[in-house]
Amino acid sequence: MNGDDGAAIAAAFRAACAAELDAPKPGNVHRFAAGHGMIAADFTRSAEAAALALIERGAPLGRRILGAVAATRAAVGQNTNLGIILLCAPLAMAAEYRGDLRANVARILAAATLADAEAVFRAITLAAPGGLGSAARHDVRAPARVSLFVAMAEAAPRDLIARQWVTGLADIFDLGLPALATWGGRAWPALAPYFVFLSAFPDSHVARKHGAAAAEALRREAATWYPRLALTPDPRALLPALLAWDAELKRDGLNPGTSADLTVASLFAERLLQWHH
Image (cartoon, rainbow, N blue to C red; front, side):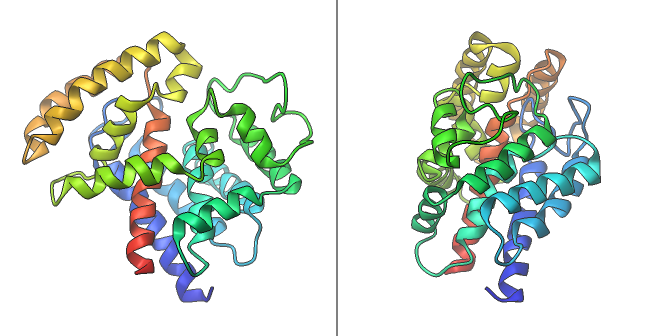
């Protein structure tokens, strides 16, 4: 990878983060409304801070993740993008190599070492995401004793980010990218993957903080929204309704953060594939 390649990957990451913020994603922070003690500018600064660590030339995966989390913490003083970093770091690293992006991602994730696990455990504890809790095995507050792949496999049944690590980001490639492809030239393309993920899975962040029943209820409600969006030639016509639901979710403290993280990763993967070609 040369300097121009790194700059292009960093630019793609920042553009993906900006596109996600541009869309009125109910329950999540965006340019139309703040929420959960955060504003859109916090996420813009976070993307700027994290980008350089994600493209550190020659750095292993774990060091990139820890560096991006540390840079974010220094920039905004809170966790705004841990899930984004965990999903986008392997994509950024995979884009540095020739060949198929998806195959490169799978290879990088499978090759993650014990040292990568130690760095990622430190990154997660530094970010201190809401509702983290503890685990009987491979708890991130304890020393890492297994590879990152094994640790993520343990968490995959309860955490969608971990699930991506053991499936080669399968949901990004199989759900997020097709959703973007079918959205066409309509406004706010980030809404397409956001509602696909939100209606396909109980959001992990909501489940950790509010329980499985609340996450499933949110999933069912999102599933009624996606057909409306898919059939609307101009989704801007639904803005008042989207913002009304957004206000309701934020009033109840419900933040579908994992669905937003998966959305950023889908937007980033789309840009990397365009750049690769």
